Length: 320
Ligand SMILES: [Zn+2]
Image (cartoon, rainbow, N blue to C red; front, side):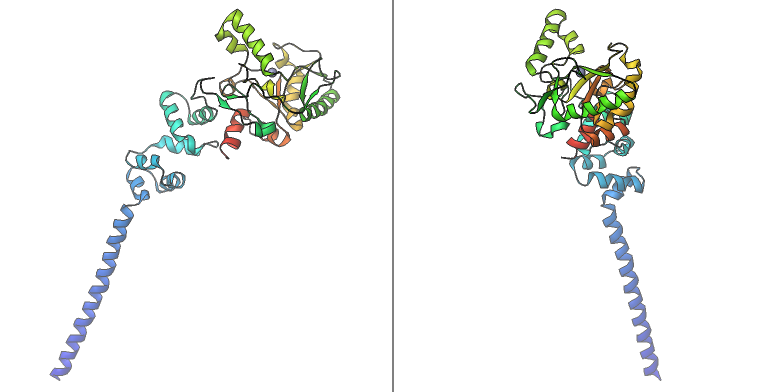
């Protein structure tokens, strides 16, 4: 009897011991997991006031880049989340966005992303970027992107006098697209006419230097592009008016301009310097200046209501 009692006691102690070991292991593992979790970015971000969802978004975007480590040591920065939500946000430009926003406190995150994307955090003509001419009909030329002096489009053709004043050349595909557009406009009751198109580096230089000589550099920069910076050198641009309204002052109020705004993209043309986008394009509103980019891109630019500069930054530079 005493032996049996002893056996029961041993068994009982054994069970208790096992329970203690199991419980200890569970508690220990929990502590360990907790300790490990506290080392994660997710935990650190939540500690700094981000929600779980925001923390996950940030980790997704930043992974382990150098800026992220800095972010972990600071209080919550809601502005970064605003930037990331922007449709045209480019991650490589984050430091530039933040710098630009610091200098321009009164503008929205949308404006910061838009303006930095098109290089407005740099002064015009300060650091010329050589234009990538392999982009063909999507070559970008503006106050930042520059064409070389000897660049001349390969397939220049004369625009027929039926559609244009004399001595106007554009690339063959620009001409074909323009003729199709001209015919459609004619059917709608408008007779389009081109009064300026391809300009060589030297002719642009002449125009610019003449204004500079008579009115100074500041005035010349206002009304003309510096040589190498004019889109007219690409052979993809036309200055187009309607036969009954050829004034730069009033063409914007003509029904022909409205027609172009609604239809030009169907022929691969975009309005290059739209009203209200002067700060993005770097140019005053020019209702007459239309640029050939091909149908697909023209449709995107038209539908998303963006400028070619914005398109180029997000869909071409960013996609590299
Ligand atoms: Zn023009």
